[in-house]
Length: 309
Ligand code: NAP
Image (cartoon, rainbow, N blue to C red):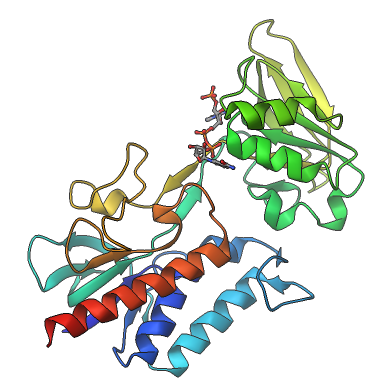
């Protein structure tokens, strides 16, 4: 039986692994389908402290893994198929095999919501991105027109951030008013470098032939008019989807599926803890995920220690 099983291998998962490994709990990390998590899809991470020149997302995650393994973390490239949290010890089915655990740390992260239009997937990392904080400062976007898609706080935040780099930021939204909080919406619309494009949707990202983003095709939903808006980058900020489907009906979530911890990082199930983006719709940064992974590890360690007294 495992003392600690960590589901997920992003910054939250590996930090939880590092701390529980150093507490000599020999955690088992189940990496899931995308070892290293969303960060491995980013090119350069420039906002993780300790890397003055920036660090490649994949490299950062590999280093986190090595650091955790150095202290005894065990890695399995398994995908969890089901969990039984109805009684302790907990049972997980991983690629058809049963894994039994005294405690579980859920660090399954979140995925970006996608538009699902032609060119979006193909041009990812070639001008299509889902994170202005991660990619906005890249040379390809400097002094170029940029497009942000969405009308919520995330889209406003991305657009405001991108004004530092782009020549102009076009905020494409499918309605004629922003969903974002009032203060954020006002700040966004008052910015001289942000131009809203109302009632419009992106129907295609161009240009596959050039293997780079050169613009977007837009359709005005009210008039039906279609046009091409040239740009060097498309920042899609239409929300996130937490990877919590597996825990539906077993762990308390909010209406959007984000896990809601009840006491520190402990969920409604005693012995099951949560860390990172699957419980965070506000900050969603590698460093905040890592911080919450540390907190979950300490909570799990103290939980086990209290039980064994
Ligand atoms: P959100 O509030 O759900 O907004 C998503 C936006 O994308 C909406 O404007 C929505 O349009 C649009 N959208 C959704 N699907 C679309 C599609 N398929 N095509 C085109 N547009 C689409 O998501 P969020 O902005 O990521 O914010 C999530 C939560 O985090 C919110 O509670 C927000 O307040 C919070 N947050 C807070 C901050 C902050 O306080 N600084 C920063 C970021 C996020 P409609 O408006 O038409 O639905």
